Amino acid sequence: MGINPDEIVTVELAWDDDGLPTTYSRDITRRQLGELLLQFDDMADVTETKQEAAA
Image (cartoon, rainbow, N blue to C red):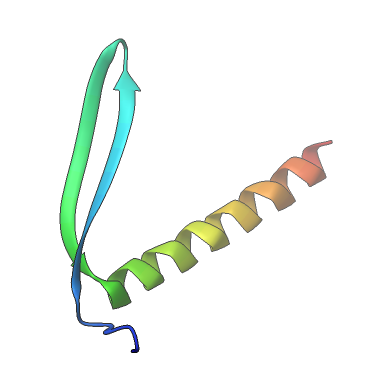
């Protein structure tokens, strides 16, 4: 059984906003989730490179 890239999944982000719990939730496709995760990975690489350059 394969993964359907057009299947809808719910993505939920939660964080503490000055003592107030805040939640952000959206329904997206698995394909969009994959693209979002790739963007996060690229952002992490850029951040790591900048931190290494500043050290």
